[in-house]
Length: 420
Ligand code: SF4
Ligand code: SF4
Image 1 (cartoon, rainbow, N blue to C red):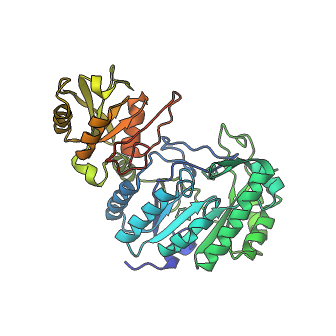
Image 2 (tube, rainbow, N blue to C red):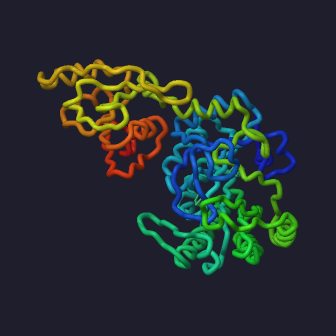
Image 3 (cartoon, rainbow, N blue to C red):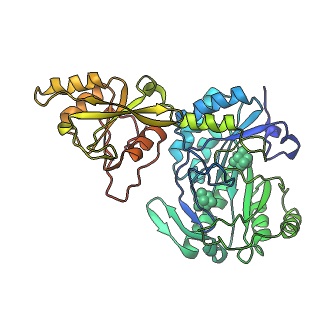
């Protein structure tokens, strides 16, 4: 089916009952901390931005999209909207967009970001024919922004208070200008936070309109427990309606925003179907590309909870594999006895032909190199087996409170984080 820009259900109210969108949750991190945001990964019942039940790698996301389109051909838009910021980890986002663009040349592509790191990627977005970008601009006055953002991280530097808020707005303005130069449709979301920026929302709309933004979306605050604004009363519907009317003097206004989850799929405002949720769960444990023939992971563990054995001293390895949308222990497998030099490690590699990775406390260079020849990643780490499996299958960075170290074997095509 040929799709034009008017087939985007978020930008065109008239088609929201005919065309659906899908969010691919591939962006795990954020470079800004908004005082209203808490990202979680395991809540399927909560519906708001920042929430996803799983995280996908770019290849998993493509497969999930392919499956989803078979089930729901109304999908006209692929969006990346979290659970973190798509440009905090731009390589994951851009790789996903590229895979989708190659597989589905007619698909509308959409990205939602805080805007801090968009400007340097505008040309790439344009070359991928990303047609819609949403930026969330909550303040153009750094004094007000300082109340909204706890910190802003640019590369390795962290900025707080008005310096951080000022930097964010400068980057957002640059991004809007350049996106418009490239002909991208730009929507600006503004979270209406009573007592903080509600008197400032119209100024935001006026400034972004001057820069060429196409549409405004005033989103009432969704107070999330455990955040700075967790106890702030959301604005009343009549206050939001009045603000939208004023904003409408400067920009067309979107009023049907569904505050979608980072893994939303289907028509706007409709909850994901159980089949779609299952497909997402399944996709998150599906090995990618060359890993398909080797779905399992070997683990050097003393007691079955932690990755805590050196490969050289492990007499057996626990073999885990994906099952029913998760992973489980399949068996334990004896390792070849010590001695024998390279032959020992070649024998081990032969017994691990069904494994894409081995999680170990550490390993010598010889086994690393030999296992790499067999395309088995050796991942050195300390911590829970579950964390290691999440890294391999779901691309989730290990965040162990104990010092955690991941090192991939030389055959690893991944990003040095134990996942690829
Ligand atoms: Fe794009 Fe936002 Fe609509 Fe998702 S909900 S498709 S990110 S405009
Ligand atoms: Fe959350 Fe988005 Fe703010 Fe990041 S930019 S803290 S993901 S709301």
